[in-house]
Length: 137
Image 1 (cartoon, rainbow, N blue to C red):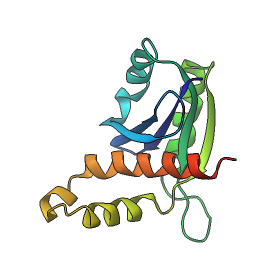
Image 2 (image 1 turned 90 degrees about the vertical axis):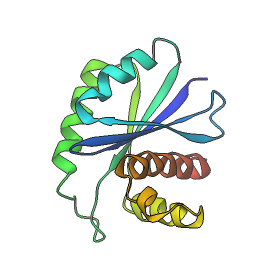
Image 3 (image 1 turned 180 degrees about the vertical axis):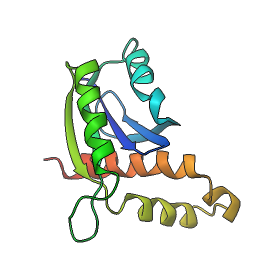
Image 4 (image 1 turned 120 degrees about the horizontal axis):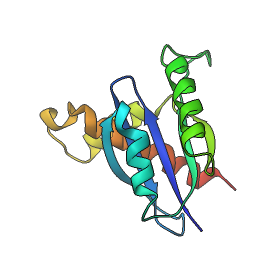
């Protein structure tokens, strides 16, 4: 069984989260500049088996695509071209940033730590992945 990687793709930065090998628990992996994601994933797959990419689908509250949707779809196409052996699923990411901020508050992080956008992106990807794991069956 391979790992699942969640991708919270953004214009500048992208947060990544990954499951354990048994696909039971989601954990933050990293946040990188968006152009570095595919090379990073290829390198990661050199040492770890990956079964699925979960790509956050950016939508507005009324379900219409957000302004980031064209970039995400372009990234999805490139990801499929570069790593065709791994399935890509799109999943709704509308509430991940809000939940990430709530988790940071509940975790007692100070204001300066909560403003760390890289941490928010990684935590958003983790929430996206954990939610998928809880509701996939």
